[in-house]
Image (cartoon, rainbow, N blue to C red; front, top):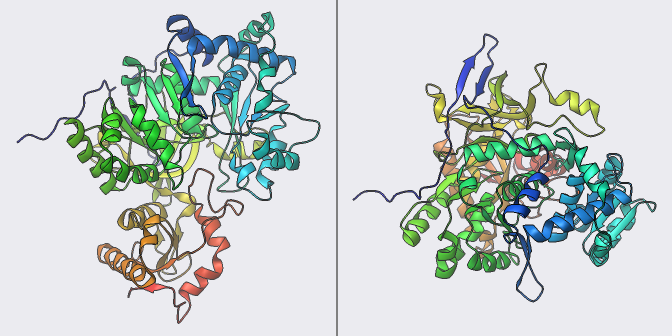
Length: 592
């Protein structure tokens, strides 16, 4: 019996030209030329408003349960009117627009209006207002951006943070006052402002998560946004063949949701259904409701999101049929997807629609707009990141015994706003952006098979024996082997004899009592030890953490990724106890 076919969708070529230099660097680029792209992303809004005015651009749940929709034809005049209001307030590069609240139709209208008029927009993580207790990061980013206008949807939720962090002289508008932005129709000022925009116009400031210090304000230009969408269109022509439909929760203050997914929708005349759910208890129900009603053509999520969604897909036939009904591609990002989760989705797709759905992934960063590498012909397995996309040059630069990924091209940021020292440090002498991430070839003898992630250079450390520990791959191995009982892990052992790990337990641990939990993790530790190839990846001790990672202390970013260094610093006493002789009784050990 032949294997089930993969659902056919148009895909671009996946090829690479490789040049190896005498200095040890490896240069990679696609042999295909990047096609033309607009000077301003809102040119696509104008196009679709003219060609498909009745098509829905964005939809959001109403309080009573229905969908509130905004078509392209409705969006354009509203965007122009709001642009007039922003111009009238004197907003500029030095006095941009800041948006502090979550994804919404109003958020999108403000963002597009600002971009159309050449006014930078600074979407800020709502967690800085709603989760943080000291508002230090909010004060920092407001001070760095110096906005002339701050918008937040809900006064009751955001007022305390804004009172604490926003200067009294700065105008603040809450959702109840949004109508004032549309009080006047657009004048010739809007057309004149738009005519002055170009590829180098700053569209946004996106703030990094601050995992290596205070958040950096990454400059996002129109050239970055538009060239990156053309790169996507050439790698995944499926997006241009059928107007994409997204059901998406990824936040717009991050590059994945705010650049990649909004861009895919707008560039290709698609529809974005705002998912106000999250892959966590208490919020996943909203996602399930949305996916029962709307079948996406392409679906994006983080590995944790796919893990949380899986049991519901298995149990709910309506959800399963709608989800797979017109799904052409399924993409994960932000971390390595456990192979069992990958396989489970393949099996569900085959059982539901008789076809596999192609898994894709890639690599990118806020500084790369973000699309820089893609497995657009399908990922060989979890952990691979593919090849550099059309229009980008990639350099693998030797650093110790690893190769750092660096990029140069139209979608790469010019630097960090008002942070010239950080900008200089971010680029090498040839103008390549230094990612700080290591890559290696899946098959060194055949570069066309692509590359795989080889860890963060700044996270790696040496044992007392002088042996390097590659943290990224080891964390991925622990997380995959321990799923669903391991939410995340942090590797220990710097200047010590053995490698250990701090474990943030997953939700599945709640169903086990203490003895059963200890037995489970001892068996995990024994399994990891059996599979180890040497002291650099032999984990000899584990400690289960009872306190969740802290946002205020920088242990976790607002998108949920763990900051290894911050956790080790804040929990140094626990690490010392784990390595003490005798070790803390909570430590689970195996012989090295």
